[in-house]
Image: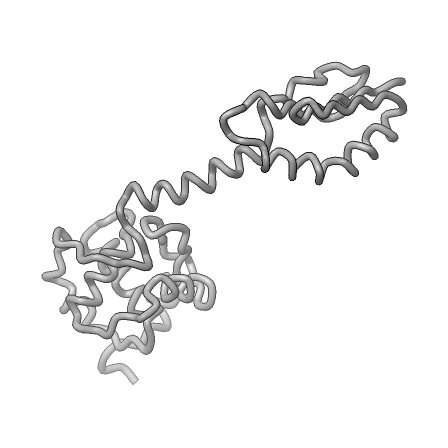
Length: 199
């Protein structure tokens, strides 16, 4: 049985034909170089990176030419940054959300005795999701809560969310507009967070 592999990176064509195991081994060795080359090719030429995986009898040698995984990864990364810019919410540069109703925040927040910024962020997010029914609160709205309660605002504002996510696990900080409360956050809020007047 003969297997054929055809790779064309901007006309740097490589043809390999022979035993399936040999072709697969050559493909595996060359894959790293292929991915590096794909990253360097300008996005304006989508057909200039035809890459294919080894197939039996050489069938479908060019089928994957426009389906490169690295391209998809790059697009996904741009989408996250684009979402941040499109929404106008940037965690490192928080702004007041004048439309956020903080009239009930004092009473809600006053029931708890938070020890640190992650606990404060958790309380603010709980207030917005449970009291105000905001499906996806953002970092600007959390900043607005800090201002409304008169609490000291973290100097490295974005870092406070990373810490709440990675060190405490209370939230899953994906983007400034996507920071859902985790099960660990729910458990901490409902069972461990110190309430005022409690021992």
